[in-house]
Length: 262
Image (cartoon, rainbow, N blue to C red; front, side, top):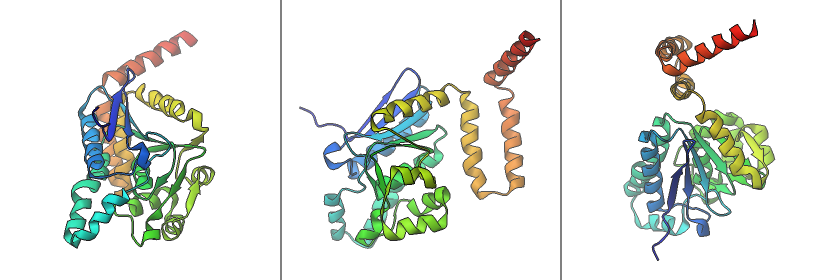
């Protein structure tokens, strides 16, 4: 019987691509094969015209427990440059693939997300969290720092002071607090997580897709540019979008409703 793939990716009729981390016995802790398959799945989804929105979740009872300890133990046999290159040539490629992505990515946090697993959820655009799930920036507990961008993503979501508290203490954040401080968009009952996530994904997939993607660019690029540069950029986006069939159809529908209301 063939081994289960470390990543499953399925696309439904609504254009929702679901990327499932698939090492449930290890709480989806990642090894090298999973990392490379994760990155490859994201890259395929980016160029697949059927995929409009991507959902990332975990198989079984965990989202992602971070790095697999058996594989991490092998790092002691490597020199410092080899350890750096493992991150640079593998783990970091997920963060960079997500940064390049034009399509929305939603994390459905179905269980514990620890260390790099927490950071992988933070890389996504939106996060829905099961009531029983937990998050933790647990690196400090083993004398490490976030090597995959967690110290970049977390302060942008919750501010520097709150981020440093979580990074310095490594304490576990329950769902209610995660929602209150802005680590996640919404908390839902465990049994409703995937339905709620897919409902949100479908609502975005039903919108004009070029506008959805331009919004993603505008929001993230605006975090590192001046207002004048942002306004120059979005004026170009607006000019392009006004030529799209979706915009013209939307204007025609609005005019039809306006005439009908008279």
